[in-house]
Length: 307
Length: 307
Image (tube, rainbow over all chains, first blue to last red; front, side, top):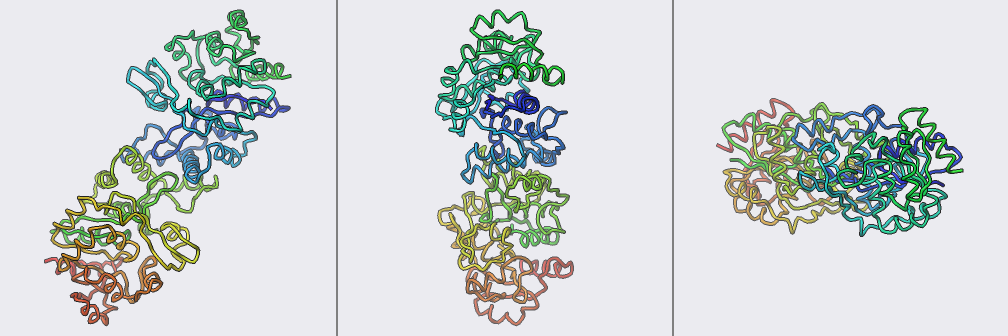
């Protein structure tokens, strides 16, 4: 089994690619929950849902988020009532949130609900929230402290950030399913998700980082930055705003001795020596998964490392 | 001002009729909240919503509940996920519940939210929940104890009931708006709502019954039973199951010295003497509001009593 540490879209694409191209392997997804929010009383888990929808092949490729064949009747009516319509909840998507919230109220864990939703959507691999406990990202910005979704959706991640905190992380416990996956899987892959917003809150859960450090040689990561830029989201400017170099090397330095092997894009080949200087090996290859040839090359590269 | 004690559909019809025909008067609705439920994390107030939707003329006349121009996309998807789709939440209706739940989470009271929704729907009269506190109807039945909505929606009020309790009622407080309405309005009308399920939980809030007893001569009620039968809902068989006579007299005896004047249907004219025996005056007239001629006669009867 290969365990993949996941944020949202980038991780979902990687899992989807691996499920298609690395059919000899089994995968387990360990997913960030610090983006989760309660809105209108509903517990919403954007990263879990993005991974689930993408693996179920019902994600909306055109919008880049949410579900295919989506409608927004409820949100339109909510807007008319003067409600908080900024989150743009789709009708199909709402069913997921209603289902999850009811099951949680009945006493199910987030892990159990994620399993039920994965089963109902016939996703072929375990999708595990890193913790069943409440963890919430807050960002200090020029507009004051913002919750993750206020920053990401309401302000379209356009506000400069001076500090990120993961409330609740220090007292959260990783689930036993996650601990088992991370200790027993042959390899661990860190998806090209936002290091500071998606992977950091996984690493912040007590026990996870120590467990990973002991397994450095089994751990590979794919750089989310290509030529210093993120394909999607604020990873590039967030790195700079928080004092890190906005490059593949910067991400490698940020993860430090957690990662034994790096996959970086051809554009960043000049950074190989610096990354090797951190004690990791490096594969240089095309990493853009949205493009079939490039995605296939990335999959082949990962397969070589796995074998 | 005339204050009307309200359950759902019957009360909504009465208020609608009075608003149309008794234009010289102002009305205030005091509404039952014991049917309210939390489902999928959403706070749902069926009686408040029925009254609001009906007065806003956006109620669904064909179905007899919910909103006109309704769709059920979310509920269909929820059903596919194996969720609790029995409550049949409509998409438009869901917007109300999302709005209310969010506002309550922000610290607004049920009274404030009811006022906001009434304003947004341009309802011309105050719609007041009897209390901002949590009150919940439970029924002892042959299938064990059921919550109100399990009894009413899931089992279509078809299960025999041996006992009804209004949990939380004894420690609930009527709102100051409700106390003001009940003490200062010239007349109070008890709508033809279910006495045991809709009006009883209003009367069960400490202070309400005492306040009403002191004003018996200003209080009229419309019998919800016609020839011993309810037009809608389980009022008739519930009366029998709980040891009351299922008739206009039975309802009058149940309310006892709360009501100074009764409006009963022509079909029940043989019960006038028995009801007068309870110390009330009686008007016999057509009471079926779904029929225009009959509704108009009822309105005229009420107007005579008011003047």
